[in-house]
Amino acid sequence: MHSANFICHDFFVMLSFLACITGLILLSAKEQFETEMQQTEKILFRMSFSYWLVYCVAFGIEKIFLPKGEAVIMSLRMTTALSYFLTFSCILCLPLHKFAMRQIQD
Image 1 (cartoon, rainbow, N blue to C red):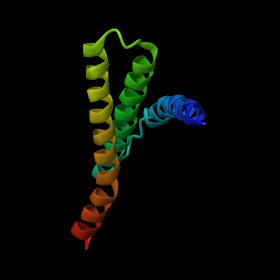
Image 2: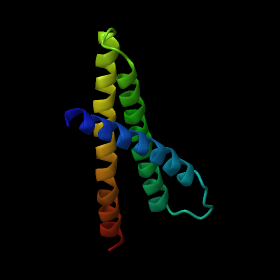
Image 3: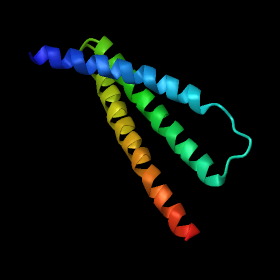
Image 4: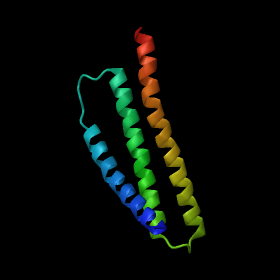
């Protein structure tokens, strides 16, 4: 039962890796008439997808490496933790930015 949870988590990390790539491709379309607010939101979305992509890659590399390289495993774990928190902060900034822009417009 315990290993089934790990396999399920690994599957969702792989799925989110593909979703991040798709999201970055969709965000790469350039619009000519973007407002500053739209540009900032696009940048925050790109950062969120990029940081989560780093998390997925570091998580995958950590799964591939055997416990032989303790320094490598530790640096990968630090990378996954840092990218996880950076993703969270970008996602948190999106509604805060919208709220701040709404306050400025009022």
